[in-house]
Image (cartoon, rainbow, N blue to C red):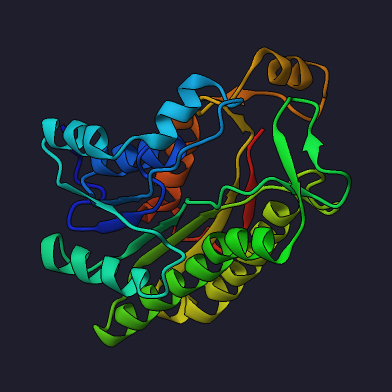
Length: 269
């Protein structure tokens, strides 16, 4: 049963066919929000755990079905976010079918694992490639380019219609020392964080908040025994989270109650 706290709000959630994105779409719908679930099916390499490969290769029909079964409104659209025309098209689709978008969740990420050291495998057996123009551009096209243009499209339409309430949430990773063995991923997330912080300050006058979530290790199907052992021996990594636990924080940031929370990178442990 949906609640009234987010009724009449409309969200776009990227990467919503599995993991944190899917859980966020469900959590927002439970608050009464209509959700456009965007996704891109990806064929992961064979060394990845089967559950993760299956999750990444599926569409978002099950997510939409779960939302509709509980009385919510949702729509799924497959879209490659590296396409410059994708953001405007997604907003057009949402507006035509669900209403004006006032919540944007930048959850999707590119697929690259790259390094400055020798290509091969990391300590978890994941394949690495050397940083190149191709690896850099594939990662930045989604995590930076698409996220920035989605924020811009969100802001342009919000301001044009005289909107007074809006929420933007992105997801980040890495840190002050970068993200060794996933260097383009870490750099792209740092750039997305910078865009989101700028959006928080520039768009505050229009009633929009913008924050980034730094999740803990989250089991979206990729967590193996080796990963669990690494978390258990690292005092800074307290939990392995379920996607729904991270989604609950995102849904809170997209609520009326979080009106005073903006321009923050919120680290979950």
